[in-house]
Length: 339
Image 1 (tube, rainbow, N blue to C red):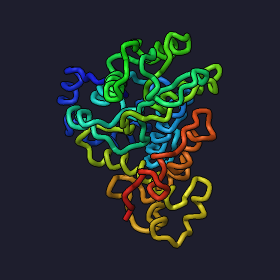
Image 2: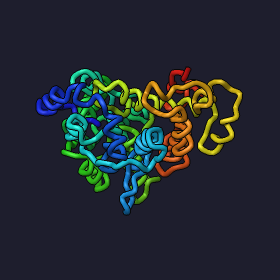
Image 3: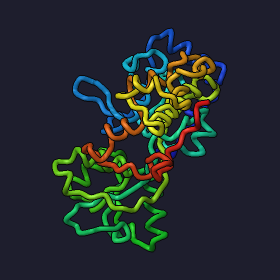
Image 4: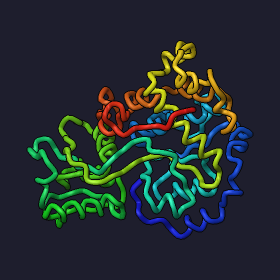
């Protein structure tokens, strides 16, 4: 999610996997019988396996939604755990069909790698976590603190920018090569502060021995729009991925849930009827059946249901909807209409 550097090898791989080579992703997926989804190595709430390798999370459910739209079966997905370093290459060389792995949508990734982001699944931002007994209530009080940071990431640069603009001292920063080392150092008391994306802070905290002993400070110091991506050049596949997310958002806005979707088939609301395939044919143009939207909501749920189940306030991760609320509720989540 955070690594800045993109190797020349990845760029070269992207160049050789032109649009023509991957222009029929849907046909390949249907012939194979399942979707190959690239995920994290394990981030609670987003993509995380249990002891039986059953994956759950917000980003996992995006892939399950695509599988439901295509196969009418949300379980027709295989998951490939990917590190930050290999995720783009795996998408480029065809090892996965879609990347749904806490990846920040940036200009360079969107324009240099042959990758197309299909939307924002979660609006994130970099934050800070401290021990509650430290008595710190604001990031503006962190001057001179020992801050645990992962090296070679935008996290490191964001922190440097923030401390500089606030006139604060970051000379005691402690840098590690990966996130696991950062977390362990923080738990061992080698640092006063742990900084990364706020969602990752919350996810990591949920696995601490005493989560309540740690607080996430209110300041968010960067923009990290996290979303799925596909290879560029296959418009049909891009549209399937993009409208899977849009269907989830539209369903929440229209009050269509996994629980009431069958009753909503009888709705007189034209927008609901179009979403569920009762009125019009919005499936054929993207190579799917007319009830593709119904399948997604029936088998997986709307965006609000997924958020509440995986990362919402009633979960151990406990992230308020905030900016990820629908636009009708004061947030920025918004989907174009189906018509």
